[in-house]
Image (cartoon, rainbow, N blue to C red; front, side, top):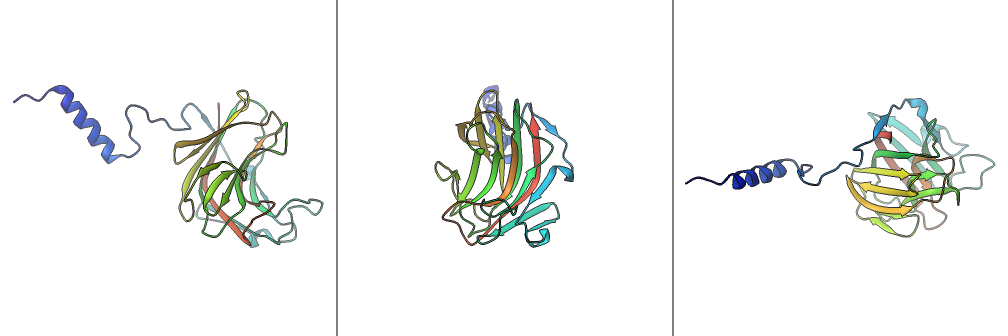
Length: 219
């Protein structure tokens, strides 16, 4: 009996997809498609940490993993600052005010960290930040509002944040899937940050996040 070609093709598609979860011959698109990666060196990774604590007591970089942690009663990053405690990477030398830019990083948040901003775009025409992604009890929220994702404790996840400045929008992807989009807050001197930055209220005493494979892209 002759098997129709269409049946053979369908079998091939199912077989390929079952062996590669990322294979979707019809609609799969990676958030970095169409972007150009911007080369980074260690000079692009500026560390902000409590001003009175040595860096190695709040940060480590081992085997490609950046581990950042802070305590609720730590001092701010500058003696003149009245902000909450933080240990963050600030992407330096790549500030932007137009175009389309993207942050990518693989993040990890240990169980117990809560009320901590783990990634943000600093700068805006209205307010201090364009977007803040904060962890509360293992869930990711837009500032302390919109629920973006759940169940992020104790696992690596891939985070992509795309800021279309000219289009006035910011889009968030987790593990390659779009999970959130919002209007931005206007042009400014903009840059990406990741790590841990305590929220104003409802925070755990200890906060930590880990990052690897941090990349910046642009169009």
